[in-house]
Length: 375
Image 1 (cartoon, rainbow, N blue to C red):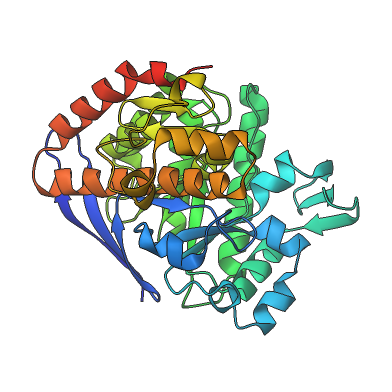
Image 2: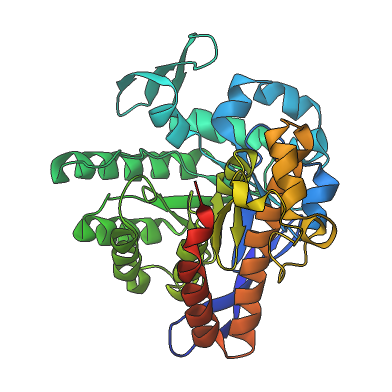
């Protein structure tokens, strides 16, 4: 039911184009996954998300557990039917939100006691609970429950969290029973190379069908992120998909692909879009900038999205300054298309044997154009 195959590889960088077979379709990698935290990609309908070319979206176990509850979604026939999305869905374990968003009370080897960020009610989540919730959500890909450590951290605490993550991964695998749902393990170890390598090796011994790389994009520099990805490359199975969790800045995506990463997700395109920040091939653009008040050109003349084909920078600036809901919709639409299409272009470049040139050109253009961000 689940199969990952590499169809092309860049001989210079190792970047790979692959296919991951799931019950709801084949995911062509590398791929960017829009985040639908609460069973919706913010400001977008499912048809619109499909129109931009999204192959898979992400749902959040913690938020869906808080409301409307896994039992409600299960009664609806699973998350696909509940939100009317017919393509693959990945659900995260809820671990990141339990540790970062909820009012945390106590971490034990059995699980995590926390208070809801909504009403302060007390909850306890074990690895088995995360699995139970995700199996009721019926996503195509579920993630093992893990402890995501805030940076900076000490080597001692990072190891404690890594060991706990490995124990929880084993418990998740033992509890998980859905044959139509792939369970991915998650590599932790903060910025400590030896811990990362050890975690990857021990997870490989458990033989998961795919592996997430967690605990990055949490405050470290780009260089530190790339160092960890470089260190992990030789120790992650070649025949399994690799998912860099919570990473969505355009240069990070391209550099992640160059380091053999297959899957990415992030709230950046919709969150930044709602705040008037747009992504272009020539850097970030702050649509609030007065310089765009009479700029009747597209956001990105090289972009083929619905927004760039039909509207101007001046119009988008007007919508934003007027507080119109359409501003959030159009800016989110463009940003999502930009990242989804960026990964499609990277894949085509790998297939055509020109990925190094694609990488070089994109990085040069994006970094040179960073001035568009404005004030």
